[in-house]
Image 1 (cartoon, rainbow, N blue to C red):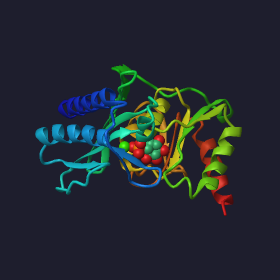
Image 2 (image 1 turned 90 degrees about the vertical axis):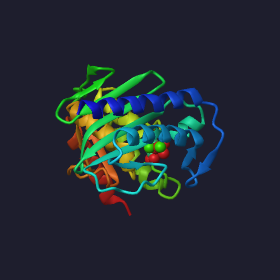
Image 3 (image 1 turned 180 degrees about the vertical axis):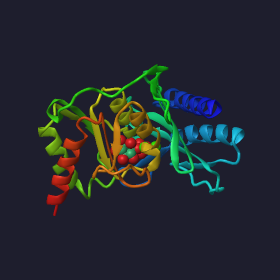
Image 4 (image 1 turned 120 degrees about the vertical axis):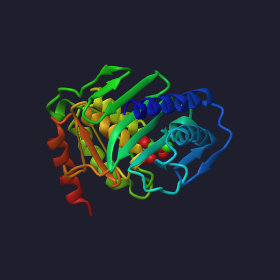
Amino acid sequence: MKDFRELAVKAAKEAGDILRENLGKIKRIDYKGRVSLVTDIDRKAEERIISLIKERYPSHDILTEERRIKEKGSQYKWIIDPLDGTTNYVHGYPRYCVSIALEKNGEVIKGVVYDPVPDELFLAEKGKGATLNGRRISVSKINKLDKSLLATGFPYDRRERADEYLRIYREFMVNSQGVRRDGAAALNLCYTANGRFDGFWEERLAPWDVAAGSLIVSEAGGRVTDFKGDKLDIYEKEILASNGKIHREMGEILAKIIKKSP
Ligand code: IPD
Ligand code: CA
Ligand code: CA
């Protein structure tokens, strides 16, 4: 188990170094959709992580954002986002990270999120708590939505479904101290885990966006569910994460707006 953790940390740090060293040196940008980008640096960081995993655990499965790797049927699956926050990265906005999780028989048991800019490494192991640079972290104690600071993101179909996303955003905006939207879901989850944010919601994320961060929130004492408050399925497209204390209020807002949506 220690080996898994050490490898995840090594891979996240090496990939993070690649991101930091190459900021401003992007050679190629491809469009996966109208507002969804991938760069040569996403791919370079991803290759580094994959080669470290393959070298150490050749029989493990790997699910990674920018490459399809044939499944081997292993009980272990590494879930990788080599660069969460690509749009920020392309624009030189220093809010991005590497996210690596390890699933065993369908359950996430390790999660590492590394932000190379402030050199912050968030780590969680199932049943063992969560840390930031080796120090234990826990969620905030804010117990009213009205006093909370929230985070969210707008999915890649935002041009088509802007009104729907803005209705939800508006309701949280007028019922909290503020809502931050800074383009890196994995970091939003980690900031919820260590109390910088009190809650986070987003739709249409992928497993690599949330696998590590959701374990980090729950191991820091928070709650992570779908919008209805049911157990999170990282392969489904909704996530509601919070310090637990404002979870019901957040869920009520989501239910109210979604019910009213045309
Ligand atoms: C994106 C970021 C963003 C979220 C998008 C994600 P990427 O990941 O996490 O915050 O709003 O939905 O896809 O594409 O930069 O890895
Ligand atoms: Ca991502
Ligand atoms: Ca990515």
